[in-house]
Length: 239
Image 1 (cartoon, rainbow, N blue to C red):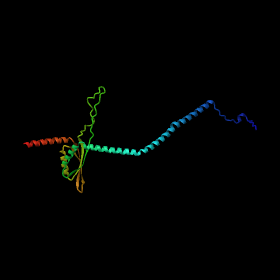
Image 2 (cartoon, rainbow, N blue to C red):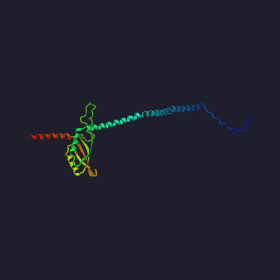
Image 3 (cartoon, one colour):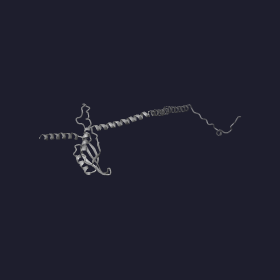
Image 4 (tube, one colour):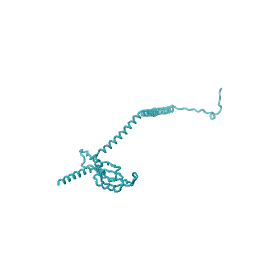
């Protein structure tokens, strides 16, 4: 069957024709290739490593969970070691100046008044300031003539803060105890901080707190006084 279109050319139906030249085809092909390379690069160097890292993290977490009993045991041993060090430190503090402490406690007991007793005797050990080393001259390797002094005041290790807490049935007993305490070579700067009335076994009593300084040099002073006193007594016995 033959069809003849007798319409003028301007009224005839035109067919759409799409054609590309070779250069355009090459550019489009190159763009597609670049996109494929970028997708492959993203998959190979980003997606796969991330998946591998996540798998490694899960494996490490599972491996770590196997060591939980050992870790708990190590933690308990560390806590035990810390407690042992604290106790050894306390023993070292008690053993240090042991002779002086015996003298201090004996002196304190001898100065207690009637109807008075001590409930707490607490001492604070200050941090002793350490002088820094003298700077070294890099030219001749010798130290400077004068070393810088520490900024803070010098602390005497033999003078320590202390607190005495006690109870008494009489205000006169507290006053007598303070007077006797001031005569001690071991206690200085005595200050009565507070005093209040309390109920002690259905009887009225007074609680008091005294702040003072402990002078461990008093042991040497008292020894010297005892030697001098013994010499005087011996000399008087000769006449």
